[in-house]
Length: 128
Image (cartoon, rainbow, N blue to C red; front, side, top):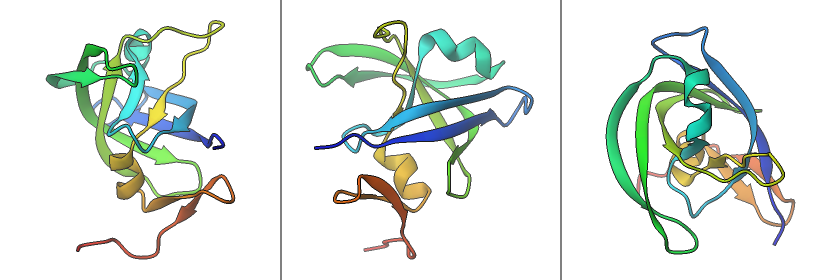
């Protein structure tokens, strides 16, 4: 299976000059927009909404901080207003890999095109 990476802009709604722009891996197994805790200062003063336990792909349980409110804009899609999850991450070759989870994809009306290895716009929200 191929990897889908998209550019994302995250803005702190309480301090709008605080913005993070990065490339992020689309991960339909993740729920949140996940950022490395090392970047938390870059988003300015932000509210910690709650702390949660997270299970990683290796079945390790780690603590995460859900923070917000933020505006998240996946390149090519309209912005959504949500939260981000900050986790301790280990960079590979000095590079972190943020994740775009399914909550943000659904809010953005973005779907994964498995054949084209890209995100496509969903015309209608699913209420079923």
